[in-house]
Amino acid sequence: MDNKTHLPIFGVGPIYVLTCFILMVFALILDYKDLLKSGNIIVGKIFIIILGIILIVVGVILWIQSVIIQKISEKIRKDCLVTDGVYSIVRNPIYSAFTFIFSGILFTRSNLFLFPIPFIFYIYLTILMKLTEEKWLRQKFGDDYVQYCKKVNRVIPYFRQK
Image (cartoon, rainbow, N blue to C red; front, side):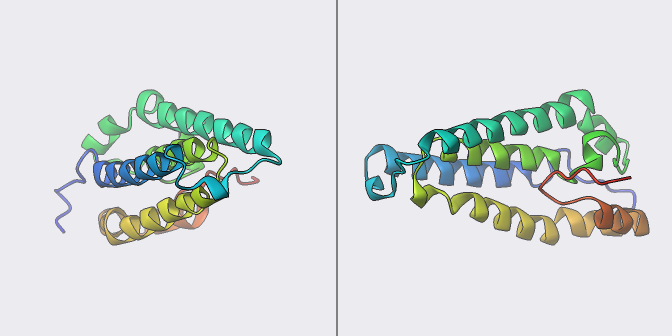
């Protein structure tokens, strides 16, 4: 890949988000139609709903930090490797945001049959990133990107000790 080309502004985002959204909606439809009734959780339901709400809030915060505050699209246009701000705690905060939001929505349904779906989101994103954007970023930014990957998680935000 030529160093003069740059990653599309949206990367694989639309593909990932649309696919996960469709899966989430399909699961919610099954749940609303009581086809997953035997998976409904009674004991501890409030804690699972609270966890879902927390995931949604964290997702919204990640999205705001990466898109609005850090203005990532401008930095992509300038071919910058962004490693500061929210990108210092997670490499893909926008994708993480949607993963957290969709997972949170599923958790608020308190149904055991919906709990594996966030793992599907995670695995799907990991595979998608390894085959596309991460490969491109490694070619574009070389060792800088490799070192960044060693310090910062792909999907799950992590605050490292200094």
